[in-house]
Amino acid sequence: MPDKPATLQATPLNAVHRRLGAKMVDFGGWDMPVQYSGILDEHHAVRKGVGLFDVSHMGEIEIHGPEAFALTDYVSTNAVAKLKIGQAQYSGLLYDHGGFVDDILVHKVADDHYFICVNASNQDKDYEYIAAANGHNAKVEFAGDRYAQLAIQGPHGPATLQKLTATDLAAIQYYHFTDGKVSGTPARIARTGYTGEDGFEIYIAPEEAERIWGEIMNAGQEFGIKPCGLGARNTLRLEAKMALYGHEIHASITPLEADLAWIAKFDKGDFLGKAALAKQKEQGVTRKLVGFEMTGRGIGRDGYEVYLDGAPAGWVTSGGPSPTLNKNIGLCYLPTDRAKPGQQIQIMIRNQPVEAITVPTPFYKRAK
Amino acid sequence: MYPANFHYTKEHEWVRVEGDIGVVGITDHAQQELGDIVYVDLPKVGATMEQGQTLASIESVKAVSDVYAAVSGEVVEVNSLLATSPEKLNEDPHGDAWLVKIKLSAPDEIKQLLSAEDYQNYVGAEGSKH
Image (cartoon, chains in turn cyan, brown):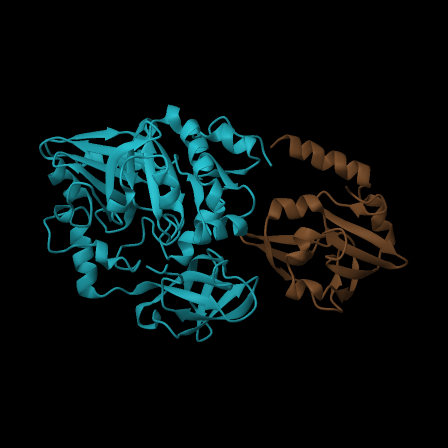
């Protein structure tokens, strides 16, 4: 493996990961742990117990001011007006042509304050894009270096975190958050995640990250807590069919194509990309994202071609083994009329067509 | 760690010579780098390999990696254990989880391969960069 280039960015927990013996990779310019004990082991820990992820590479953008709502609503596809204080919403940040700049999580902190969590490798681009769209009386602030973010995910996630906070976590519903304290330090505690499991994501000061990481590991010991890397994060989110920027969504893909029509609200005011989406909706979406399972031997991976009736018809955006279901699963784009469950497809794996079938998604849904 | 009677490549394969047969596998270092192995795509018995050609593909949870033929010759046996238990490659890469047996067509190729000591030094140097 190459030396860590000087240009790679590191989270405040970089030394902790190295002490734990994590395998580190360059993830969009960040030096991040891909695994500690092993992807399968970490994956199962999150599905059955609890796992702790360092997701401090994620970016944060804050929007303040009297017209914070107007700007936030204009740059995002979902209806910000529906948010109550203390609520979070999955949304899209689009180019005028309707393709994704990024997928984002909008939190309403106050009537004049929105907190947006964005993808690590997109955060500079997102900030500049939102700032450039700011024709409102609002202040756009890049806050990526003000927060460390930890994800405590799994059925025992709430019990683990509850030991460290006086905030009643049971009162925080899914996709809601509250500002409280974790082990004495101010924390934004959100019941969100990227695993398809119950749990929390907390935003804390970077200088507290190492101490809080240790506190959470101790608190979760009785539940068999494991540190988890990006490898398990990917297998977990794929089972839950959550999009990954650069794979299911990117600048040439719209929310309508990505099976994310629910985040594009046409009945609100104007927003970036709205006209292009409206036109696409009217003319019809030509390709759509759909899930598949391998029926032949092999694993359809990102970028592999998908064949229908002996001809190339689409491509795989993400694929791999599902540790929970013990199947090889994936997501792919297909012509809209064929992008429904029960369609026989072939995936070209090392120049050989291998049989697969489209299936309903998500592949995994936790019992409520 | 690395058996002294094996021969190694810088691509992290090993060869154990039994008469005119070369037993081929991947090294412990390779399985560690790959992580959890879930599927092994082996060649058919009877396939002819030139040194350096793609011999097998190993799928881990994270990615797929090619294994190159360390020696030339005809594949005379593939390890059927790996079809049902690919995880054995993580557990016993130098033993039960060999990949294929090749009837050597150019036995002199073995001389180009690394000794256990040289390979250990090679991965040691590679490992220290982590």
